[in-house]
Length: 153
Image (tube, rainbow, N blue to C red; front, side, top):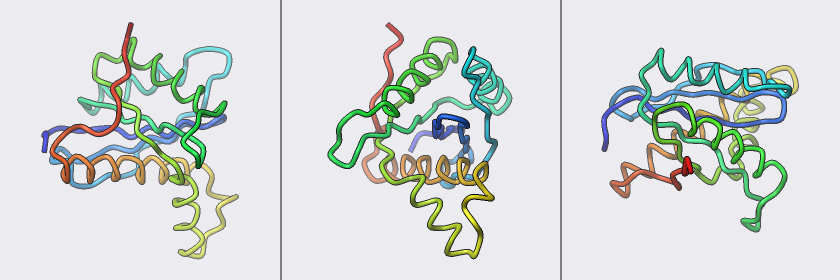
């Protein structure tokens, strides 16, 4: 298992959930919800600031395919954000299939007796935690980085 802090990035239309791992890559924890800047790149710049602040060495961005494994408009949006990050962040950016991460996070909130509609920002972070924890577990199990690295070319 590679040592260092990784970020999980759950891209949504209005917000982007960010999670981070501990340096040993054992546990993912919520970090921040970044508001989407639909007119510019403010959300990308904020994520880059967080990467620099926490000295993350890799970003795992959720790749939201539909249940048949096909691309959707959300897939294209997430890939666009991943490509924008890869172009400027200075660390590898990887796409990882994230089917059901937001659904899983919302179910966890309901199971805890909380209303998902009142906790959207926290759910975005929780979805990023589910995504990143999945990536950490996959890497530990297969001894290789999970997902597909985003090309900067």
